[in-house]
Length: 123
Image (cartoon, rainbow, N blue to C red):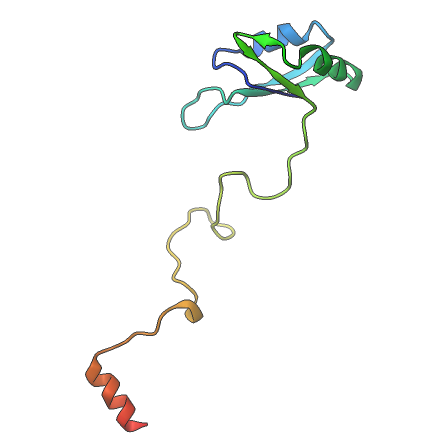
């Protein structure tokens, strides 16, 4: 299940202890920001069975934890596709690098006026 609106100071142990009141907590996942290392303000908690998870949602939705009303809902499956925040880059080999635009999108070189006039005369 998903637990949102967590304080930066909430730990896995805090969540483990709180949700153990309802049933057996199998796993607590508290993701952190890659850049700063700080918690991202949400967690995922896995229970031994679905009945315990439903009971936890009913009991702790809107519960106050460290001065914040937490949001407790059933977790949704992630959609297939690129990871969020990632935009672009072709297949294999890593790093982006520069790619020139496709030929049909590239503007035609203008050249000098003299060359342009010369081409017109020869046509």
